Length: 297
Ligand code: HEC
Ligand code: HEC
Image 1 (cartoon, rainbow, N blue to C red):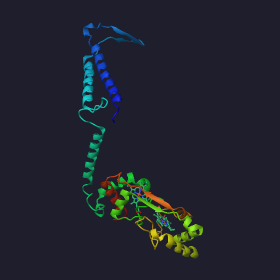
Image 2: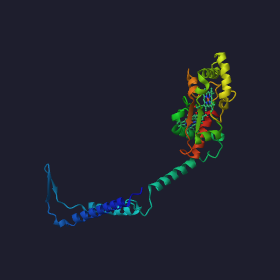
Image 3: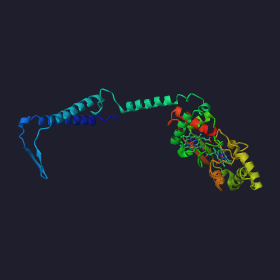
Image 4: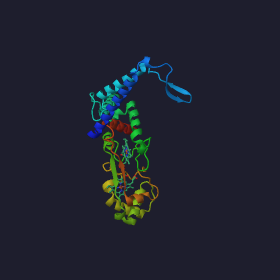
């Protein structure tokens, strides 16, 4: 931090004045020779029957004071302390941090060196890599995906075979680095009340057979019009857009009564935050390997 020169001068004056002041105090009190003290003389201070004798400071005590003053002057020459003066060593908090960071990164590189250059399907055979990935996952991902990576409503389960974006190694690295934002638009206005009922029946029919046939047939037509662009003609989803497969029994959002309709009317979106600026490339690769290992032997 750089301060204005006014503050800088103010601080320098106070520091110098203190050092001179303490030195003078020390010098003036140590000037008295030991023979000048009278045995048993008191300073006149008394409290609760305890009297203070007027004895000289022990020599070693005095030398310690002198040493601390010399130390202070040395310190102020070498390190920043006098206002904006930077000290002859050029020490800064930023340098110190950069150095420590460098050390950590070097240690980490050594720790990663046995597996980090391998392709992810190879990397998952390394127990150490998976153990590190698990710890990184606990720190950075478990708040949303759960410590067992099984997700929750709106947060995908990473341990099943149902993927919004896919589980290829490159896809996982992409997902973690850049984040994802799946957007399902609102269809309430376009479909109308009746349309929503029909399309909902069509979507439900995949996992809960026995819906009203007429509704399902109408819903299928509307689905072909409004939904196939993202969810596909077979409703099996699209990894490019993160559009879920609607034909299985795995739901990203809970499919309790009424929720299909709500999602259709209001739309819904999910955001996986980008971690590219938070984590370095190596950690992201280890995390991708950990996620990959959850569904690949
Ligand atoms: C703030 C909550 C949050 C955090 C933290 C988070 N995620 Fe996600 N993640 C999500 C959401 C929400 C989605 C679904 C995105 C969507 O709906 O398009 C998602 C999607 C994913 C996917 C894609 C799943 C699929 O089916 O294709 C992967 C892989 C993933 N996250 C891994 C991670 C990893 C690894 C971390 C830790 C570095 C992490 N996530 C941290 C919320 C989070
Ligand atoms: C612009 C692309 C797009 C279109 C068009 C679209 N969807 Fe979606 N839909 C998505 C995405 C992306 C999601 C996942 C949202 C998320 O990440 O939370 C989704 C989610 C859903 C879900 C929830 C699935 C689950 O597992 O919880 C349903 C149901 C659904 N869509 C039905 C439809 C129907 C029916 C239509 C046509 C009326 C439609 N969608 C049109 C992109 C689309």
